[in-house]
Image (cartoon, rainbow, N blue to C red; front, side, top):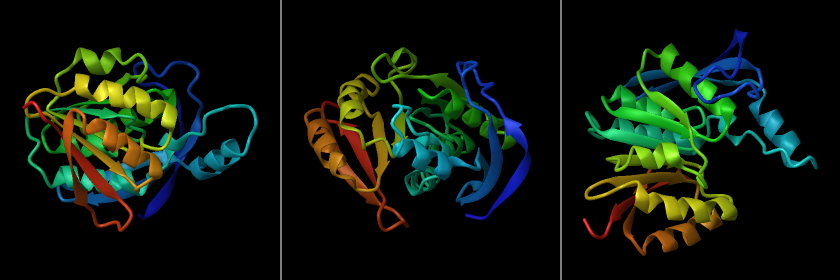
Length: 228
């Protein structure tokens, strides 16, 4: 993706972002989707921060949300190719919110959620920068009031969330509470080992099909309730 640096610093000013959101020097990438282009703001130092914290010993969670990863780009592309006009859409672990932006650009009513204050700030900024309307809210999967309160959703989106065994238990418990009837869950992943275990658990309540993407390592898993 082509990108260009910008000359400003973004702070955690989104609803629920809180005063503890770190400032970041901001760069921009342009993502071309079937519904149009999206300018995506992201921290310039994201990969460096992730690397340093991965190998640190202070227990600080690396800001995985801060990088535009292939799974998020491919999920946004899949969303942009579907008719989501008028749908109520929830994104879990939104990070920079590219899939949410694609859904809102296609006419959906979108709530983008994340537990990280910085992610919420960037999600809100990206929506404003692109002239796209969506809502943002903090959501911890162990206390997911913002997600459950709006249920049932027509479509639940998530990208690159299937890597931590501890959080997958909470996510597997949460998803059946979010969709009813013909509602669906679309999860993009780079075929990490925990994903297989997670999808096996989800088959207790959902049928699972897989959508190939333009990226050779990214798949979008489509979950639909068995009782619909």
